Length: 331
Ligand code: AQP
Image (cartoon, rainbow, N blue to C red; front, side, top):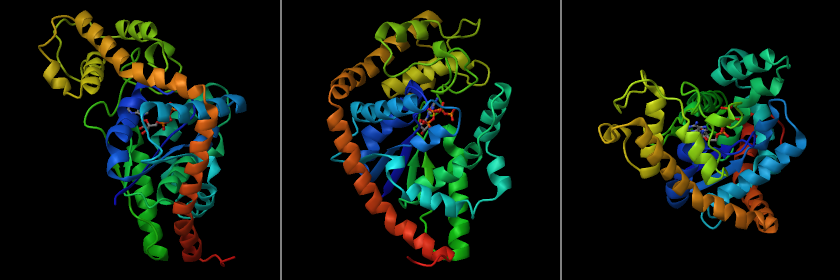
């Protein structure tokens, strides 16, 4: 059976980008067709300036939202990364497999490092090594597939390179995984700056739709989305990124194709209105279920406890094998 691993960072409130780019497919497809493991990757949230209480709160909220969106602990494994030591154990071996040059090339490291310096903050060493920890997250589980948004493609490529290198040097230990992306809305853009990704840790609150935003807030954000001064509703990501983003969001909500929306709308206003209503309807059940689950934290804890136990049992043999293969004396 295909094994799938993917994760979500508790660096902010989960967004429509997380939902359309990753979470929805985990719920609708992956958990039914594969042995799927989904993790709140909390150690990744420590790679930038953070507030401990906020990370704890967001980790619980992210886990609750995974369940609210429809992940079923009877069908898949849901857990918190820091509850499973195998990630850290493997990460240190992969740091001895990766090179300084290849991790410095990662786009996210360069972008976030620049942002931190511009804000007068120091750049944490963990920001540089974060893709290696992500590789450990994936390789520890022998994942065949990693369903992610397009922004994670480079990190999954690095994971593949590390798996191949380790296997060649020390003998076959890891499955070489591949990234998979949703057919539409694999990269939802910020509504106020449609040339940047809608990211949960980004500054522009008005450009980001959060899964827990009230319906009226969602409507307001979408109605105020930046578009261009043209009139025709055409789909062209390169020249009309704001419009294309709205068309992708609407197509993503409806399970259609953004090209098919060209010619359907006579004005940007009408497109925005339908997009807003589609998003409100998409998120309504998630918000309602989240409210129920948030009132029962004991249930969420139980799911996470059982998930961590299963994750450990899957990861341990592979990580032990990697320790032996690389030359460490068995305990
Ligand atoms: N805008 C997006 N469009 C499509 N997919 C997206 N994903 C994230 N943003 C979009 C996908 O959601 C999964 C979890 O994402 P994450 O937690 O790793 O990253 P994030 O939400 O992008 O959070 P940050 O903190 O704002 O991240 P940075 O600043 O590092 O980009 C992934 O599958 C991701 O592809």
